[in-house]
Image (cartoon, rainbow, N blue to C red):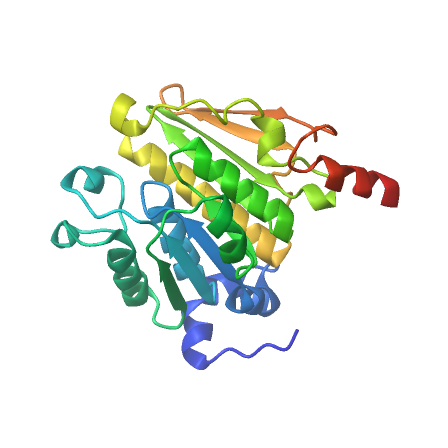
Length: 260
């Protein structure tokens, strides 16, 4: 890959470039990449900020909500002056102020099975931080259909979870891990509460995994679910496998097996 970074970009990303695993080639991969961030809330805020700071060339943000005062305890991409403003508008202004070298695209909408596939196809990778199962399932199905890596995070009360899904490479999809939640209405942080810093940690981990996927460094979270208990300050991990009978990626999984 040709390295085409301006002097300002070299200075801005110098700490990345100093990393042998990243270097100029990895920084160019970030500059050439596009990431769709679903939700400009507690998870999407730190994820989008760190992706923008890292120099991801094009970032899309999806959210149909407005900023409320109660959001500011954790949704750090927004400011007090943004209360009442559309979240995508507030987030775009903050990312542009942080890094004017990148392109920020906004989508004032709620994704569903119809709209998710077309939007996901426009980006290289998806970071999902939404707060409901219906959207998570729609995003997962779109990522499977479009062969886009999905980095999914969740946070509630004092803990969080994180994983990456790439079923076309032999891994599982989100539905393999959570096959029975489609008709269940999960409780949101508005019901149970959440420590603001917990969403910051999980969103930052999400951005880290996205950067690793883009640059091809480190070990992917595919097939592994990371869980964090903030009260005990303890990380744990479980392995999980693809479900050959999964109604979302099962046929794709069989194709992978046949090809292997």
